[in-house]
Length: 180
Image (tube, rainbow, N blue to C red; front, side, top):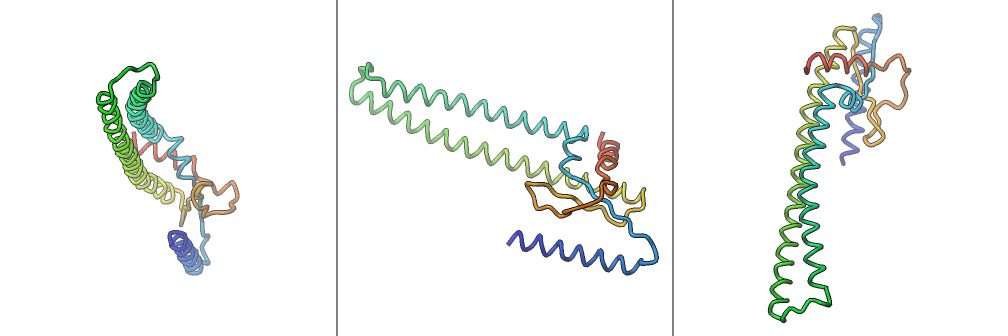
């Protein structure tokens, strides 16, 4: 479904470009391509945001690791053959372990949701900022369109382009000037 939507959007984009080209056939049609991911990774503001995201994730991971270690220690003490606990005490320890395990699993799921939400928010925010920088480059340099190349992870929109059409570096510079 999502792929069909993307393909449909690509078709509409191609048709729009063709119509625009036909409308200005006497005039040169200038198109550029850029790599949004590279803009994010190469710009100062993007690097800061990625570092903040990494730090946020690492903080959460440290908490999860501490909980994981505690659970492993509890499990080891329960399985220790030298442990001389009475049956009621052993059952109480097992119940404590189950309770902590459930809390650990909930916390892990919550942290994963938090990190994914924060990533989505960051991507949405920076996509708007990158689009504004690309628009500024297009207006300054007379481009009718600047297309995102896509990446190996995402669907590639531009399968081939001449290297001279790549405006990623200019978009990075504009992005940095707009987002200090």
